[in-house]
Length: 201
Image (cartoon, rainbow, N blue to C red; front, side, top):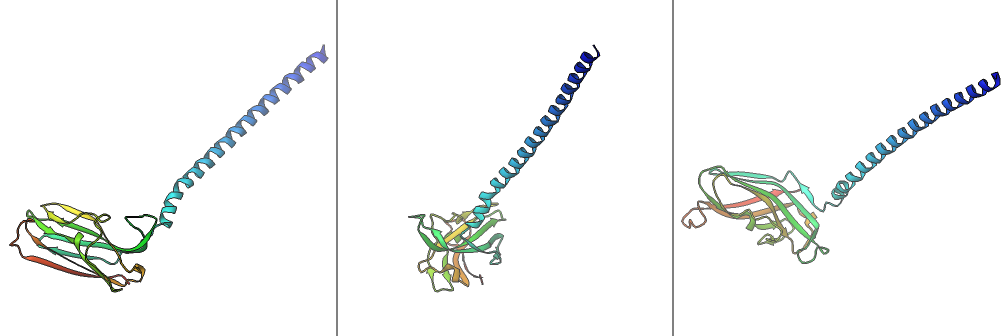
């Protein structure tokens, strides 16, 4: 009888220990799954960052953030915020073909109650490498010219494609455009001429 009780007690103890061991194993498995899940989340996060890193690596533009200019013409604020150049711009006809281009980020703000008419998006570009481009590319440039009514802010990029290339060699650029205070059809208004030179290097 004592033998039977001993065997039953030993069996119960073994089952309890097995149960405890099983609980520990389940806890360890849960912990491993949690660690794997956290590692996967971290891995997924790093994967999400990769397209941004790739985009930064593939940026074709050289930025000249110091190439700035500003003027206040009777309450019309005009500003060039930066200039950019590239020898790897896709063309309008074939985005796989590469060409040279120059661009500026332009902003206009009318702080008056009147109207102004200016066309910086039709500016002539002259470069230190001997090119003169009479008109920006209208397909890729933002339309920021024309009549600017009271309180209006216009901003965007103006892009010129070069004919002889070598944008990266440009040391300075010059822009020429004009406009006047008043509505677009105010032909008697005095013209304001701008000739802006920006040093890139």
